[in-house]
Amino acid sequence: MKVGYVYDPIYLKHDTGQHPENAKRLEVIISHLEGTGLKQQLTPIKPRVASVEELALAHDERYISYIQGVAQGGGGWLDGDTVMSADSYEAALYAAGGVIRATEAVMNGEVGSAFALVRPPGHHATYEQAMGFCLFNNLAIATKYALAHYQLERILIVDFDVHHGNGTQSVFYDNPQVLYISTHEYPFYPGTGSIEETGGRAADGTTINIPLPAGSGDAEYLEVFEQIIIPAAIRFKPQLILVSAGYDAHWADELALMQVSVTGFAQMVKIIKRLGDELCDGRLVFTLEGGYNLTALAASIKATFDILLGNTAIEDPLGQSPHSSKVSDIAHLIKKIKEIHNLA
Ligand SMILES: [Zn+2]
Image 1 (cartoon, rainbow, N blue to C red):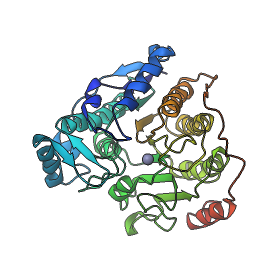
Image 2 (tube, helix red, strand yellow):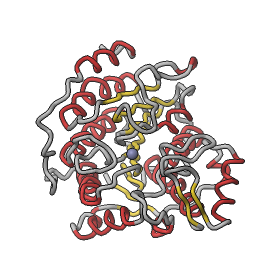
Image 3 (cartoon, protein in one colour):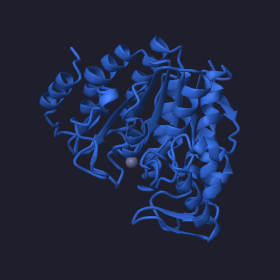
Image 4 (cartoon, protein in one colour):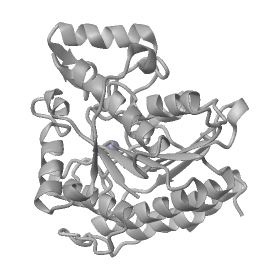
């Protein structure tokens, strides 16, 4: 099956200045995919703008107008972390539209799976608030779009960004059609994502938080994938899987304290791919969230594509974490999460 990717130079025009979330991230990813010859193996998917109506699937219309207004005024800081430039609104429309297009391409069978290489990222953006480098919640918008447009009843979101996707969780907290599973460093920014957050009254159990201690690496992540994510996904029977793919849990990433390697990310993606193949005809839509060490980011994205393509050789230029000898004991955490969610 074909593997698609969404990219457009418009994403470089979201100018954040001196900021970890900058245009260089996508430039390095694209040049690495080109330089390694991988890009030729992929099917390009042209993004489009998301309409205001589509943005409003996950956002307050007053908030959408506010973001448009800030761009018209030349940009500015929305909070202590989140900044936009004059072109950021347009880039953000294409980011949301890019994930929608990736979803359409997968649902229509143009490609088997797809990865939207977009920015600004989205998983911290709530219904009415920008935060954590995010303006619009690209993945939440695409999820709502897929539910409505293809009459789907069950979508699984896996969020392996090192930060908790508070925005995504909040959009779907009361929606039993969406199972949101997040692995994240905890306690850490943005502060949410405890095991007790399990969904609202009408959707209890459809939010599964896996808050991992700082220092967790490949072994811990793979353990929670095996013990929690696989059985929860199989039980939910998703018709489509969307992935908030952030690579800031890499050991070389300076924004967090996890110890995951490129090989570790590849193994997680392999599990997600297997779940997709077994549960929903391989329908997977990845979207880029965090990841700030450029070498680790580019190599991890390439490894993700290699897994999706079925390529067996994974290149890990950075290797294992030099600190990975300290394995944190997460057996107790896993046991508690399995109890809360009735996972045998
Ligand atoms: Zn992140």
